[in-house]
Length: 518
Length: 67
Image 1 (cartoon, each protein chain N blue to C red):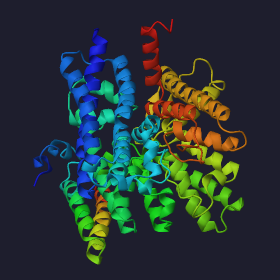
Image 2 (cartoon, rainbow over the protein chains, first blue to last red):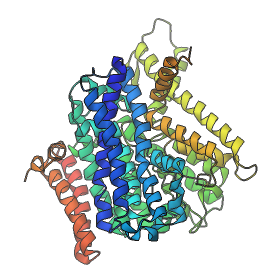
Image 3 (cartoon, rainbow over the protein chains, first blue to last red):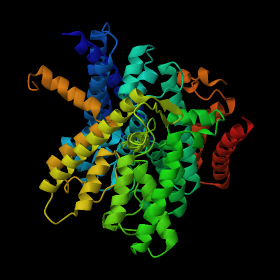
Image 4 (cartoon, chains in turn green, purple):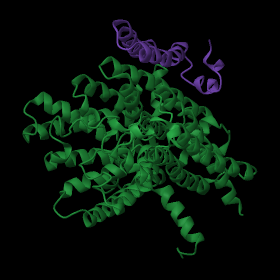
């Protein structure tokens, strides 16, 4: 056994132990709601990752600290393992209900076709990956009829995944030193709040927990029932988008709830270091921080454009209604929350909006919000770096070769080498993002029934999966999405959450080791 | 009570904005949600929840103006 495997194994063990802890904590929910049949499934679901995690951690406890390569592999494999083991509650509870053993009393009453979908391991894995990555695409037909335990588990994994599984592990199983920093950065984060990475992740959780309470109470005040408020506040702030109702937020059909969710989703799309500074009283960051300023500008422009498109396209008959749905759906897409108010039963579904409106929403999903927040997509900072970098390069022609030029991004003055580095990173991620988006679209076009969905529907759905958004044009579902599509979306969601590169590094390491790569 | 004294998660809860008011809001939050879950929607609980949200927003602004 070489050192790298030991390091990766030890840290994977810690992640699995943390996951087991989440499952054991969740036993409170079936106790409160009287869903006792779910308790054995949760216990078994927790014991398996705990046993594996404990054995890994103790066996490799003397392993070296992770380097950059290890960090990326730990992040990629860790997220995939978490999705696999996180699917156990879905799978085992669904089967528990199917078997309905008499000793578990009321299990048979919870049996529904929606829950039965999770007896297929791929559906359970899809739901788990969608939850942890904060995507929000679902294999359920009707979330309302799910047991409360699974409603909670879906919301809880999105809430945890919003901040990050590794950030959680680092915060709880604190381990000072460079190893934690490597892991922190491998989970698509870079900015620190404090010099210590452990303090940084603890502060991130502190902010996230406080904002969750505020969001729950805000949603309840505007009229949402408390169970809905708890679940939707968690998934809204985590910009995950799982709902406990059949038609997402459209079920409530309430203007107040729609508008109350806007600031919650926006909070989730602003970087945690900025939240910290704002709570410290430094409100200037709302406009001095480049990404935060652009969160508002970008949401404003997108909302205005979408409102005009759906109003002029006669999708809605009043300007206010167009604004209500336009603002919610753009913010929901661009923050990668994926809540839906444009749904069939109450109004015009997103999949039937004009093509240009759907593509505007796709644009929102592709770019996403601020890096260092809970959102997916390419991230605003990369989009801005690309735009500024292109302008900088074009400007080169107008200056003599001897001119010393610097590019200013977010208060930093970058020299030529730094510009090249930042621009290259942004370009690589954007290029990879579009490359895998293209593959996804191609595969979906191949496997979906001809003529059932439009091209904009397909682009919409793949961008939603890879951007970890969760808005659906109606393609994703246990029956409507073929098995190949589910497997492809699993990959899209996974790479989208980790910003692609850690996954590619891991795949290269695996193929290299197996002799397949060279 | 100091948030650092809360069992198990005390250290985590203490790692916030180093402000007693925010710490208090963090501790009061789950209690208020529990009360709402038990009592349900009434004028009192609605008022308490609205006060919590309003106070949070007002205090963030207050800190911003004061700084």
